[in-house]
Image 1: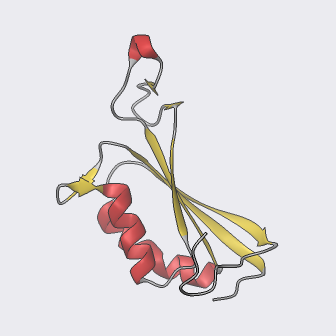
Image 2 (image 1 turned 45 degrees about the vertical axis):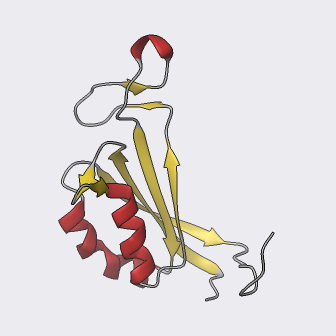
Length: 116
């Protein structure tokens, strides 16, 4: 798949403890994005944050939280990302979903079968 030029970044903010059928919610989002053929997805674990509940989650030792913020980031062409949004309606009952316009400068994968 080749992506270059205008695209969108879909970012889904959820909690580390959010689950879907006893598995991490972020894992199910990535699986569905892969099944939908989206260009790629990354999961980033935050060290501190808060959301609609206004409760601060942090890795700081004195107020250690087990429900840290998670961001799932997907970049692809806008039409493909928008087609994926109904899948998120089912999965994300609490959290934040945003879309930003981006410009893809370079998107290159490794040849099939190669390893670093």
